[in-house]
Amino acid sequence: MEAYPLLVRKRIIELYEQNKSTKEIAETFGICRSGTRRVKQRHRETGSIAPREHKAGRKPKLTEPLAQQIRDHVAADPDCTREEIIAALQINIAPQTMSKWFRKLGLVLKKSRCMPPSRIGLTSKLHENCGMII
Image 1 (cartoon, rainbow, N blue to C red):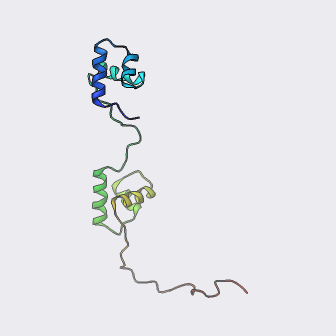
Image 2: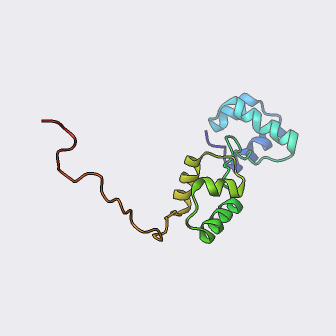
Image 3: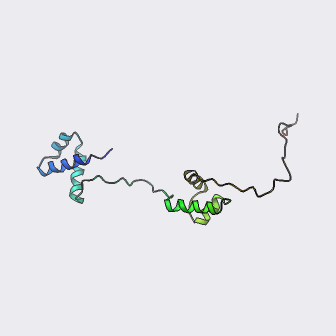
């Protein structure tokens, strides 16, 4: 539910000061009685008629300073793994979460091609027998 506009809240307080009842005020604005009562209660307790800020829910672990630390670490060592970054920054998260953060930050970990290709080669040829006995 959306908060009542500031102008309506101000008018509700003015009507309460004119000794109007909660029922009359609610019917005047076409709003519920409990909402009208809460505006009055907030004004009485805090002196403010502004709506409360929404602060519910879990707070994200990925803060801007942490995001910058991750960017710096990846820039310094692009060959590191997710687990190495988690250990280096001492963050208590799963590697899958780190992958989500990489996508959110637009980062990609790539292994360098400094290793020579395998000497063994392919273990099976494409479209050949596939191990089936006929």
